[in-house]
Image 1 (cartoon, rainbow, N blue to C red):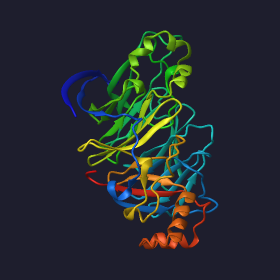
Image 2: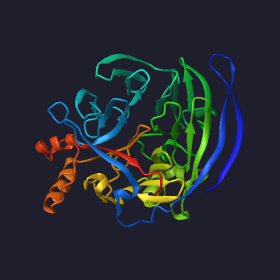
Image 3: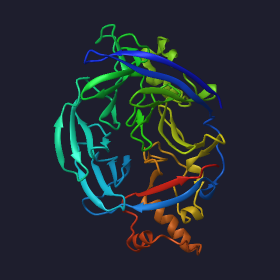
Image 4: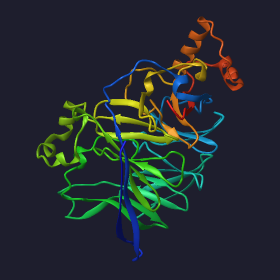
Length: 409
């Protein structure tokens, strides 16, 4: 691993006509990964300290298919259904609280302001809907005057970060914009990652589809990870700085340099090129950290590599889909098997600062439980799981898996 430290100060001119210093810091750890290397089966006991299963209550109002996005708060599971786009709210015991109905054509992503206990999502391009943790609509308004925003994240002390990237040589003049804005009281006080809205080589036509990100929180309201397409640097964003945190290095066959977009071929049919080269890593996503363990997905335009767990201390890479049941997991699965379809609910999908979270289907869960019975395995299930298994059905809602990784593996 290699560490480089450099601090550069950027002066930002704020909307309230004041000068503010914001730091962009280079202080990264290099992580070298070959996505094509696979390992054999890995026992859950080798990488996890604990595994707990939380079935989500299934009834006519609460039933859904697969998890598109999950946010874990101090007392709630808040998730979006992949098929209907509706938002479901459960207590952390799995008890159903409420459903927020959204149109399937609306953007699938939502955000949670944990400080104010509000759920936020966009209708159209700029109308923000606010709901309580009980599923009650609170208000709607245009949150900022920044125009179209691709994403946002909430920090403590009422600071909000926005991300937007819009390039079009026919619509825009030769204008510098920024990919990240920090806002408080509806006023921009810092900007990071400048780009030219007219002349930037990476255009909207080149961008891979992204239904989640670019912000990924690990349960701390003072920092988030930020990752952008065709950039193998993962940034750490705080209310006062943008830090280059991890630099991923892949084999040449998997790598693509953003500067290559200056080649005229990509202005003609970029997506066709990337579909023909599915080995190229187009983005890093679902980046979370607990202790010395990182979890992340590597994506191309048409396939996924991983998901992976990576121990920063030992530099050990663990393909998540290769982890098989063990005593720590009560001989029950922690994933839906090795056949990846690239759906968002495969791999680690959330972190609350204490645990990683994923989800498995009731089919996978109960099939393994049936196999345990046939093999006369009698794990010492927690009482909540014992009660669930008495009535469990393979058409039930997915099951949340709460994982604490080992400090070293």
